[in-house]
Amino acid sequence: MLDNKAVCNGILIDLDGVIYQSDRLIAGAVDALAWVRQLQIPHLFVTNTTSRSRRALLEKFETLGFSAELEEVMTPVVAATQWLDEHQLHSAALFVPSGTQQDFGDIESVPLDRDAAADAVVIGDLGEAWDFTLLNRAFRFLMQEPRPKLIALGMTRYWRGRDGLQLDVAPFVKALEHAASCEAVVVGKPAPAFFESSLARLECSAEQTFMIGDDIVGDIDAAQRCGIRGIQVGTGKFRETDLGGAIKPYALLDSFADLPAWWAKTVTKS
Image (cartoon, rainbow, N blue to C red; front, side, top):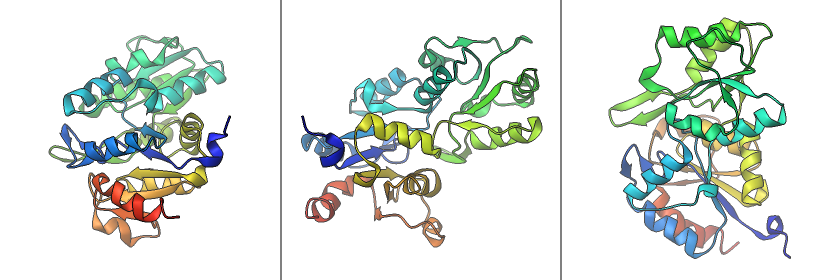
């Protein structure tokens, strides 16, 4: 049997801002995905989305006009449950949308409206559901003894919605870190552990893998720090000023739709 890590060129693909933006497909993205599958290029959808479960994401894909298998989708929740299991932590206060809680499997969900002990406090993207009361509940959990672990489902700063840029999970995690004098365990992008877990599922080495994303920091820089080549797309949250700093993508594409042509010129010929 061939060692896939020795022969493959794999792709990690961000979703929001790369394949679609909010509830609208990026033009040409589905055709490019069909090309990826036709060539049987190892690929994995890696997303910091915590507002939907993996099954809900698959349902969204169907409504947009493409499909994927459950094992093709890597989310911070998958990484979080793995981390909690490895560290034998069995209960958590889950500050995540209700639909996402199903992906936590056997982890006991501690009611947020009670003064109960928890092994961990997990922070995901609650969007406009965040208010002082909810953030203060998370803070109070963190101040209990023994101190629970603070788990961040990613550290994305912001994303682009239908009506413009919106805060993501990182600002709320930073507020809790400061208030409770603790440091979060980050299990989503840009944490190296997230990319390492993704590479293991992809069965490709970092040097033979590309990360395609719209976030110059959370996607491109984070991946390249792990030895993965970052391909920046000019859709989603991308702005021209992103290219003016120290972070230099391995390649820049107008959109994911341009991947087949770029691949033929760059990867196939190498």
